[in-house]
Amino acid sequence: MAVDPSAVAAAIRSVVGAAPVVPLHEPNIGELERRYVDECLESTFVSSVGAFVGRFEQEVAEYTGAAAAVAVSNGTVALQIAMSLAGVQAGDEVIVPALSFIATANAVAHIGAHPVFVDSEADTLGMSPSAVAAVLESAERTSAGLVNRSTRRRIAAIVPMHTLGHPLRIAELVALADEYGVPVVEDAAESLGSFVGEKHTGTFGRLGTLSFNGNKIVTTGGGGMILTDDLELAKRAKHLTTTAKLPHPWEFEHDEVGYNFRMPNLNAALGVAQVERLDGFRVAKRRLAARYAEVFAAVDGVEFLSEPAGTTSNYWLCAIRVEGGLAERDAVLKATNDDGLLCRPFWNMLNAQKPYRDAETGPLPVATDLHATVVCVPSSVALAPA
Ligand SMILES: Cc1ncc(COP(=O)(O)O)c(C=O)c1O
Image (cartoon, rainbow, N blue to C red; front, side):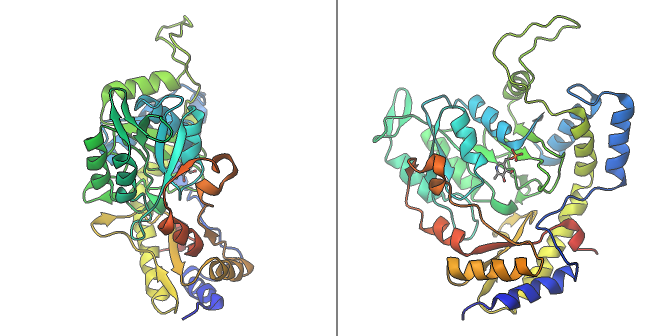
């Protein structure tokens, strides 16, 4: 049965209450954040040096189970550096999902490499291992690595992304990538607090990355993190992102062209407070998801997107699939936004974005359908009081 947009708006209202405007996702800033930020200000170490950066790295490493975590200025540069450290070079190809935020492809392009877009799976919303297998199987094994037969470029990495916080089939994907000797760099920007079994997303590949943008489950205002179990790679990540300066009390000696991709101490102070509250955020978000699942079960033509079997999602953004296509989706977006419910669609497909229209692209039937039918609904922590 065709979806009734006003019934969708009414269902959301029954969960989020009557506030005139309900944003898609608001940060949750409390006393702890104020205390740590104040402490940081008092210390005068507000910029690239200070105790909160190391503390934030340690707390995120402990939370995720990664051996090391390196804080950087945002999730996009985290991806760029992680890919470089995985061996991606200018002229290479990197397999990425067509359905992702543009940063996933931009980080590839910033290295001078080329994204190859593949399809998603309907139940995980993430990169399809069989779509990746099709690309890898058609490539040629050479002494220089796996080479795309049509472009003659080396396939240097695979970058899956855990969409809206729902874990994709990452163990299967890593096993497949290992068969071909291609490293996996996980874009876990949206999935801090999401697990496959007991293992945190972002810790399956050679490296993983997080984002702490203002719309994420944990924010530092702007920021990112590189996760890895390889301590040598972590050391390289720290060196490269902090201008490649050799440690010395006063000399300015730099041994390569590094980047100023540091996370300022002020942002890290905010991050420490946020990560110490992360489990509370997760509980609230999962409670919100359960409430949405219940009300949407009674709305015809709507399916609430639940976490994939065997995983625990952080439900960063709750989302529904509406029966039909773009016209039905847009009618729901209009009805909800007209009512002050700031629902959003998925990003436009990356292969359709201007910078990437000529990129290599596999068949994309599932991603195309997800793009045309999914609507993200308001998901702030504050919407689910106990
Ligand atoms: C999937 C994905 N990858 C990468 C990023 C980039 O993170 P940032 O905005 O911190 O650069 C984001 C979020 O913004 C994202 O959602």
